[in-house]
Amino acid sequence: MATSDDVTRQVLDAARAAYARRGYLNTTIKGVAATAGVAPDVVRRYYANREALFAAAMRLPMDPATSIAQLLAPGIDGLGERMVRVTLRMLDDPETREQLAEMVRDGAGASKATAALREFFETEMVDRVVSALGVPDARMRVVLATSYLMGIATSRYVLKVEPLASASEDEIVALVGPAVQLALTTSTLRRPPVTPTG
Image (tube, rainbow, N blue to C red; front, side):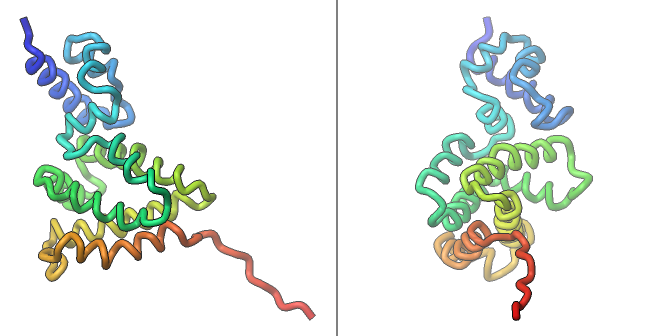
């Protein structure tokens, strides 16, 4: 008889294979369960939702649903600093840093598993912050902010550019947080030019 460790191992192996073949968006709990040879309810017993399954399969150092909810709960004020801090803490994990390095190295030719990580990031993280902002240009604002964070993360963890690589978390939050906040709160919509009257 299979132990719960055996079942979770089967499920996670099946999930990783599915993400590698189909990406995040095209992988379902039902499909993972079928590949693992268990009922979908068995998968849901261990992983409440698709996000939790992905986080476990990809060995993310956080529960995305909880982390994003905590990130957004206090509101828009201070969101930039919180995003920087969460990013740095997530990248303290060596496996997550390796996945970031793979995305940077592989770029457009990234593996399906890396593409799945990007899809997950866009749908489960970026889109939730976009919804929280609730303004017409929210997606552009969030993408600008997260692009800035990815640049900081790449410089610090992949390229190891000094003094950024050895700066403390608090130093980086103090320096980068305001810029991320500005990206989140500044309209990117073009205003029509004002024509003088008279």
